[in-house]
Image (cartoon, rainbow, N blue to C red; front, side):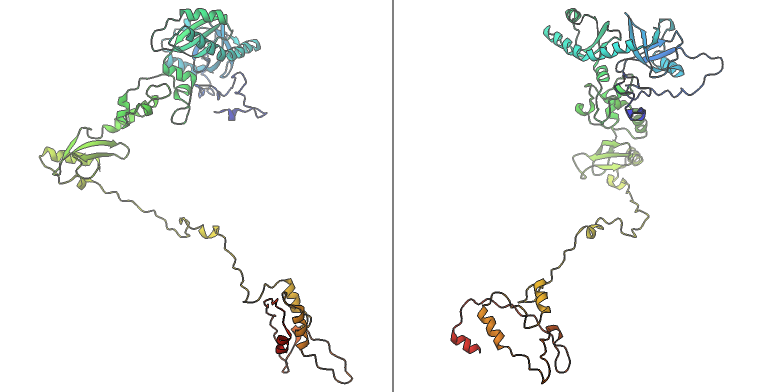
Length: 467
């Protein structure tokens, strides 16, 4: 469970910035889900009186509930310490605590277990919170003091006791360190009781935490409680390259996760022929290169690079070749024993074309609109040209660029309308759109072609020739 699932009514997570008292245990390291919490005990059986208490980071211990306090996972309690008292959080109670005791401390003597004093009061919680705020600054000062006296050690973490009477310093070192002078200097500066505790590199990684190469939090800081030895043979069984940069974790040692699937690999490899198996053919001798446990294939290569690369064989086929070699028979080539893999086609048909990768190409492209080309010598039909076409033929405007003299000559050359009959009135000029011929058919009028401007003045000779 994470902090998102234990939010309070106001939307703030209960477990974050609330003295670590998250009832769901979502913000705690090495959290435990009490899967026996909803089960009732048989009649007449007393509840288990030993409780598991969690302190800073991954440190846990067992305490006796001598006063029969009503405790649940997540409660803050004050427990017995030497000297004074310490403050911790309940992580397991009841039958789940009985299982934890049998698993982690099978030789625990009940009379030697320390007691739980009380449920922590507000004063105890205030001291506990103030102790956590002092730990970072005290650790940096302790490192400075260790450098002044040239001690080859690394102080990785500091843990204050709940009553601010003692501080435990966790350090790592490659050799034995004489830190008697360091304890005197720290006692004079911090005015508390000092305890030095040496830990290994794996315990240091578990206390500090981090992100592994898999992208998740370290196993040792979240759920792993014991550190088993890891050897390079675990990597060999899993067909991994012996690269220390890839096989080492945050602690600098081999990753603990190399042991997780080791048993499965060892059981699977028992069904394969030995890795030192050699196959003899007419082409030459072939030796084993690698084994693919999941695909159940063994890869062989000819000695001297004959045959053009690796050849994958099934373990059963390898046993057949070994049996032939025992009978002093040599097959012609290993490729004769390679099983051909038939790839089955899918049992569906692409009816609507939804498997085509180019099915959206026509939808995403925009079609370009073609521009209508005007006839040669004709300008665009704008509002002014449309208005000129609707006017009578005599009142149409001439194209720009011509001289006024040419316009007057063209108007004089036009024939006037016939005179009206006697007694009749003179008819007005008929609009261009309503002109008809003698036979009664409408006459189509083409728009005036745009003339090129002629800026040269015309003399009397040219004007007479035009007339």
